[in-house]
Length: 429
Ligand SMILES: Nc1nc2c(c(=O)[nH]1)N[C@H]1C(S)=C(S)[C@@H](COP(=O)(O)O)O[C@H]1N2
Ligand SMILES: [Mo]
Image 1 (cartoon, rainbow, N blue to C red):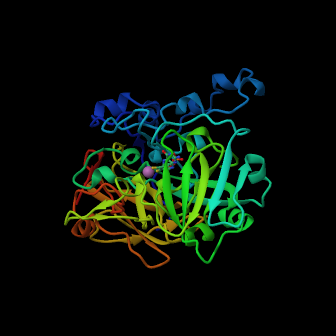
Image 2 (cartoon, rainbow, N blue to C red; image 1 turned 90 degrees about the horizontal axis):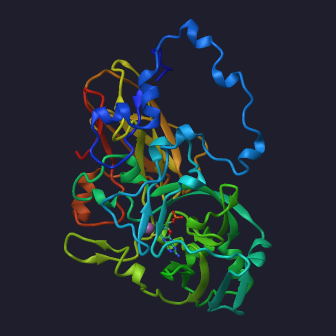
Image 3 (tube, rainbow, N blue to C red; image 1 turned 45 degrees about the vertical axis):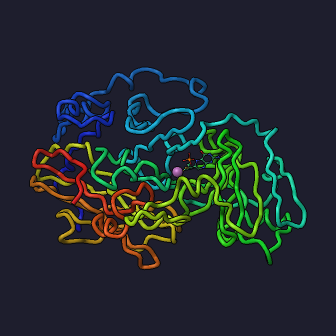
């Protein structure tokens, strides 16, 4: 599509909370709302008047030594879903995907999932033990890890339970709650293979690695050796700075493309063995309940998935007959995203979206397409294809195989319904 002739259409932000949105709340609610509604399409001479903030000195640099967003962006925060637990034993904060650009999630907005709350760890005292089928068990201090050859790589991290509330029916109104347990970051650390070489791993016998966290949950997960030797990372940096406490400070595992729970935070122990451990987090939880009542274990990979983040549930389109950009995110645990298709008629017709650089392996990929909303109801969908040729399934297809009582690994096509009023709703087709 060529670039739009019309002025871009105005859009009203998603609501601040999870309750079913009313139109009135939108117009009076969020910080961005009032200004969007008040915008004039035509410039006037008054717009050229020198504003108040151009007539005075601003704050000196030292006033804000660690930078924060503008106070006008105070509405763009992680949110907890009222339907889920928020205790020290189990808490989840969702990333505001509807307000983010590009493919890197700012550290203050990265989703967070804790099984026993976030520990406060002194990096001087933190240790990583590597033992089991190795030549020489070793204990690493942070200094020892940070002296090793480093790599920086862009990857997505997605909780296996992302979109898990939507198996049976529509459960939540906004993309923050349907898909906000995925984030993207540039991770810096050491390839796990470098450290395994350092301890002299017994490659003839080693099949699996147990990773254990230093939090109260002592969260443990089994990692197949092939993944450990391929692209798994011992990470201390996220988006150019040390990990935040909530993301595993000072040291975590990142297993690219694999469900989030395997990327053990606050990493304190790696044990090399020849069999899976069948820990609590790979038996009681993080297994897939199938329609016949059986439970599928060890679903490592996050299959290809995409979602339109704008317009998305809870927003309101104010200007029928004008241009809107459709934009969103696609990712695959098996490699690069090859193509994203967009439909505005619920999957009857599709056209190819534009992918923005970088298109990295096992990373969020930003897509966009031009759209003129004619003012009629529409059903917005995105469908991605990854480099293996895997096509993101429709919800109906996924349910045929998986039933409706699962929690994990819902990578179905998401539908946003635009009503004639401009309101955008989460629907299932
Ligand atoms: N030690 C430890 N590691 C952990 C967890 C935890 O509770 N404790 N949560 C896991 C889960 S379920 C997910 S989805 C990811 C979330 O990572 P994040 O909080 O950095 O987004 O961390 C994983 N690693
Ligand atoms: Mo998770």
